[in-house]
Image (cartoon, rainbow, N blue to C red):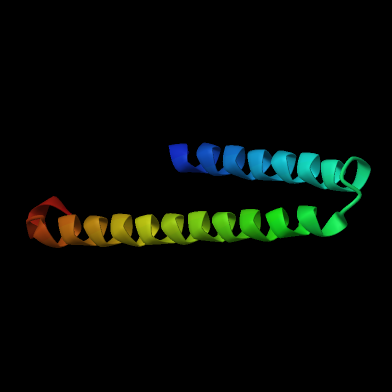
Length: 78
């Protein structure tokens, strides 16, 4: 069963890549300063790593909830 977070994660990745490409093109073609784009690239990578860490924590919470629900079931229902 696909989870909504998979689709959201894909959208976040596409948006981050799109913004990064636009900023890199701007920094090279208009501002003539490559390091401006790399500065924003580092910030976007940091935000994406935070997003991945959030997804990891949510996955662990879901696993813990499932195990707790399973432990609380009566033995004859398993």
